[in-house]
Image (cartoon, rainbow, N blue to C red):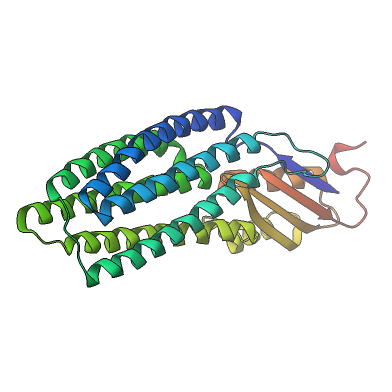
Length: 305
């Protein structure tokens, strides 16, 4: 006997949540694209690598946000006989691409910064400072728009990390512009660029670790599989637990399957109900499949007469 419980105690975000996230991503995309052109023109005019790096990061932000929007739309499609889990993993794939893009951007920044270390060019510090300050303001608004959904979706978190890296880039460009404007330290521009690149690289590595963990069917980091096994094995009427698997389908949607060997006199339906309550109450797991293995049951089990 097996039991399936695909309830919604802690589900992946529903259509309402995705629609809300899509609207916020749309507004963020509009902001980023609007100011990206300003930073491109400003970077060329001031001859600032930090500003151009920030503009390039904004371009990647725009692509990442567009990708995240597309993934949210795809994820809302219903399951099919060929894709019984639906299209939830589209969000995870988008997060993976965003993480890889962040790493590539960081490497390009390092390469250009190295060239500028060897021959620091003249940079207009004052205008650079003003343009970077405007970029920071835009990024702070974008971060606020995405903040509410980043805890529930790796896809949105990937987009949020892009914008965070951009905001940090604006701060670095502001500091660099201030040093150039006040002291003529042109080397501050490539230094700020390297600092931006390091921050971007760290963010991309963390995002890639999480997305690859999900794609490799790893157990969720917030769940202790040994504790889950112990909780199931210690339930009344359970002799053994085997073939226990816990994985993540998409952000906020964890799944479990296992085989439970029950005592001969255990009632399968009562035992299933107890195990489901345990998994829900102690671990927040609702998308579960439990296979009960038992000897022939007594005819009076479960209140039969």
